[in-house]
Length: 498
Image 1 (cartoon, helix red, strand yellow):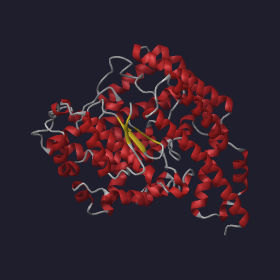
Image 2: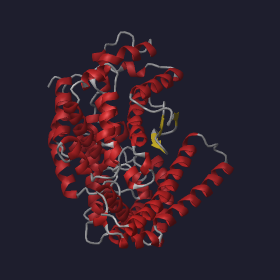
Image 3: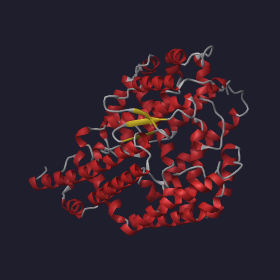
Image 4: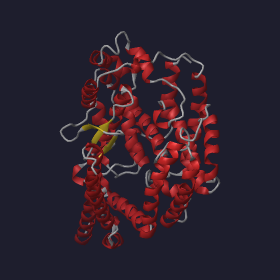
């Protein structure tokens, strides 16, 4: 039973954490403004830079205050409730990472990242990896040093992975990726010999105003809360602040449609986190992998599913007329799920996408353990592209220079995309088993049963449970690759009549 002293210390700890979380959320909100609303004039940019810097310094001071460390040392966790103990566990891990890295090293990485991004942009535009090479070498070295500061007993890459997917191990990831590779590579090779659908409909123009109107309707259909959120236009689709989502309409109308579905999944998760714990771990998303599972569920298991288009295609067809005149729901479904290996990750289809992630995971792991030198990265990249997708980029701009992630040292981020895909498949299979009317509901455009299930089984828990425990409570099993492979195999075997 919790004593009065323990209770007061717990309340103080949570209040300190909430204050830091609220400042962090404010940083996200002005980031949204910067991408969506802020004027681009030099004065506006300078003022925003000062605001961001001030808030970032305040946030860092709040999460590293010694008082948090004192309270963590003093609180008797055994006298707390299960939820309170989980709150303390998460704050302790957050604090350990925040104070474990010397301020000088953080500043060094931040400064290098700013320079590296500018050099990367030049290297990418001029197809000259040698320009970026020395910066990437320094980033690899500094991030390894950061990892050793946090936990010298573990492999550096596994330590860095914890920032994005707490509790995940390299051993588990290795098994996941090996299983995916063994199933997907032969499937991709087999599909390469099958006829492809006519995709000419994707090249037909749809007025911007119609696209925007349809995407707002789609967002509402998928359960997005417009009373507490917005759908705006930005250079890149994103979700930030309190579930605010953006999209772009420059890569074609189908890309925009799927982008909206994806970001709505993220936005719904944000809106359904328990508000009473806002700013603290119990009111925060579990991990990037779990967050990605919510977006990929809406994108792949709804907006790329046949039941959804069987019932909803006529509305899209009517709004986008004459672009889709004469097209059937079955034809559209095949086009939406086209499989075609390509060089660019962000343009990859659902089946080949994870091959791009496997490539990056293997390279990051090798860079971090020293078995791969940065100078050899382009050659290794091209070799892995050949093995995984049967194609070789004609230049480094379409190869190892395409992603921005490495410019700020985000090593360990890429695997969360696949963990999200694995999680989405497992959660959707769990929802299907527990909600017998789900397929009919989806075909009728009623996503309420799915959204209620997700809120109950995922969203409302915040960080109360570790990822594996969250999946186990929702589906009866910790995260496993089986449902994902079964989903891909059934879907594309039927679609391409293999």
